[in-house]
Image (cartoon, rainbow, N blue to C red; front, top):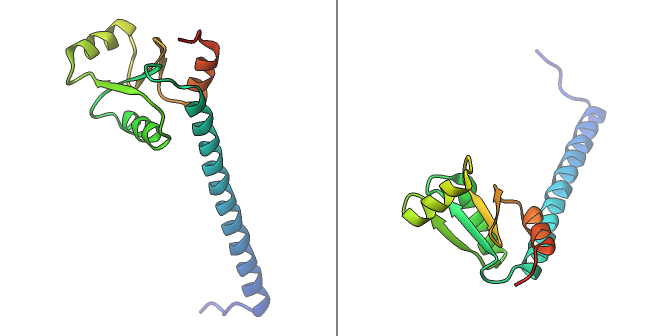
Length: 127
C-alpha cells in the first residue's frame, strides 16, 4: 500500500499546481488580450464593402470567422456556395481549394486571419 504524502510533498504539490494554474491563466489572458487588439485594429480599417466571406454551410472555419467578425463588430458580407449559384461560380472562378475564401477588396485569401486581413487592407488602395 502506498504511503501518504509528507507535509513537504503536499506543499511541493500545491506549489506546482499553483504555478501551472497561474501560467495557464496568464496564457489565456494574453490570448484574449491579443485577440481584442487584433479585432480593434481590424475594426479601424474595415469599411462596409471591404470584406466578404465565401462560405460553406458545413465549414467550421467559416463559422469561426463569421462569429469572430460579428463579435468584433466588423462589417462584412457573406454568401454560401451551397445556397447561391453566383457565390458558387465566384468561388470556382478563384480556384480556391476550400472555404472560407475571404475577399479583401476583391483580393482572395484562403482562410480567415484578422491580422492578415488588416495588413491587406492597409496595403490595398482605399475606396
